[in-house]
Image 1 (cartoon, protein in one colour):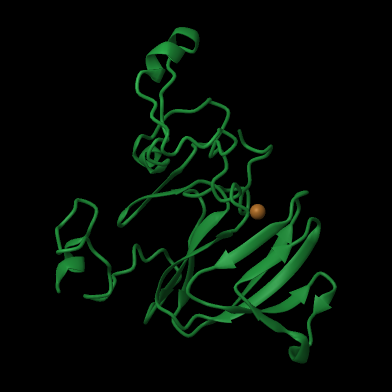
Image 2 (image 1 turned 90 degrees about the vertical axis):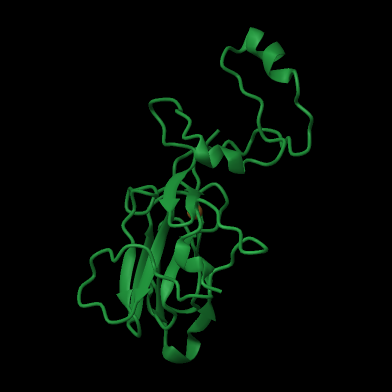
Length: 215
Ligand SMILES: [Cu+2]
């Protein structure tokens, strides 16, 4: 159910990808080289960028254009540049749905809202180990850490500071930090008090950090 490849950044799938650590105010250039056979739509959160070059050469400044997603065709390169003016942890990933998630089994028919009570027992007679799932969406899969076949990647993986992230392919995080003196991974962003959404009424949950509740 991988349609029909596994997709990576620099041969690595999230959470095995390195974060891109940048200093607040840095001008950042990223060059994508697509050596596969599929188009990739690379998207950043928290910023917009300028498309500044292709494998044909630099794009003159008067012809550069602003974007938040850039299509990178097979066998080509694209350069983007942005000014990191927004502190935080920002997803940076391919926007083709199964590329940042790889083995997400999205060819399985959508069972959201389908009452599956009693189904597991019957199917288990034919397919031992079958588990009914998806009545309330697939988010529950994130916490199961189910084992897949030994020759493939996990379906979804990665832990964030608020819980499972549910990505497993062309996905990384741009970490924009003020006042850093090196580009080592600085850990999760410390969100300023009052900037993180919480449950209505301020009820504390296990995955909500304490500093998110200083109302
Ligand atoms: Cu892609």
